[in-house]
Length: 337
Image (cartoon, rainbow, N blue to C red; front, side, top):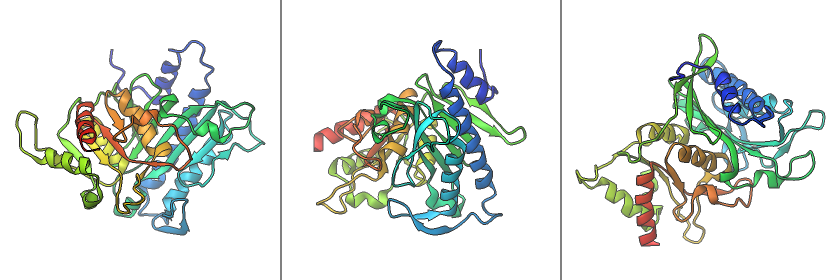
């Protein structure tokens, strides 16, 4: 029986009942998170009417200019999440260090990591942006969270999701039991189930990549994209290029329609090739979601969910999307590397 229209709170409680020994702490954590994203959505939707556009004058740990909405979203998440008793620590793409829950508040058994406003360079142009989150269970001893609680493989996530602030606000999440999407109905202030049990197509007809960086790509990626552009009716080529430049927006479209997103290693400096996307705040949570929806994510030589993080702001290449498309990319990668 379809559950379309069910509010997200009821859906989360229903998911909790699948685990008889559940304490309800993860449910409470997700409820707090949902509240925070509603606050962010409200501010994003009136960005042209109040003084939240533009930059703060500060730079984050990555050397990027901090947008006013970045800062607002980051603070909104911290303020909504620090006192609920469900977390011991939080880490944000915008903060250099992980932040323990203050001693005046009760401490829980989960760690929250997030990108408060992905795609924020597009804010002033009214392009879709989003919040990405990842939740791990605490593994260290004692009440306080430690760095090791954050530096866990993506496969150990207990929940992950994102909120996209676009023509409507939509929240997509998984607790390891499938992927569901909820659209915010502003008339009642609730996220309602609009995309039940999302399954990404096994193969798509879209590729998403910043071809302005093509000259810095490795040979495998260059050959693969050339392959996608060739006409071949049997394999459904050529593929169409669709690239927004906001990871959440590009990922969300491809999750629903099928396709592949590529941000490979950048060889601009041949002596220091590097990935661009943040493992803990972007690549890992989206990889967890796409696998739950039947897709796949890789760096080219390693499954994204099997990477052992070494630092909070570790960057990786990201190839993610429909399973057959990612496996085809993998064949090119293996051939040219």
